[in-house]
Length: 166
Image 1 (tube, rainbow, N blue to C red):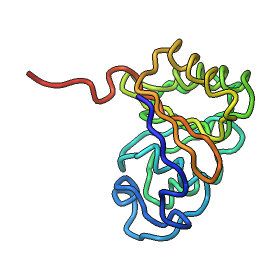
Image 2 (cartoon, rainbow, N blue to C red):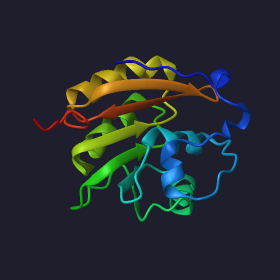
Image 3 (cartoon, one colour):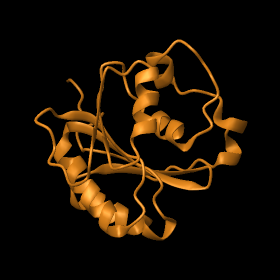
């Protein structure tokens, strides 16, 4: 599935918070930065375990903590995943094909079987490569958005939201 949202269709300054941000904090405030948009795509619950991959995760980690996330870690792409499985992996910046491939591998190893991946700042010409690598590593429900003239992807592992009780 491919979703698309343009910055023109959102309110100016991206002031409307998603339901997730409402779960994580009591204040509604303008969030004009791209990292805030990635937080909204991640849609974390208060008890979500979140791992930020790459060098550009500090701003987003601070924002997650401000909004009440209790389990946020930052790892380099070269690091081996922690023993703890994350609910959400966020890659704030993926500018090259090699970094896209490496970060997807690390994210997949970091996530539990119901996990979600958010990849930000993907160059438009590398969208096909990113989608192919996500599928190769078992991700589904691929969606992309453009916000502030930057491309972001959201992918989920197959069991995410697909389990139902009979």
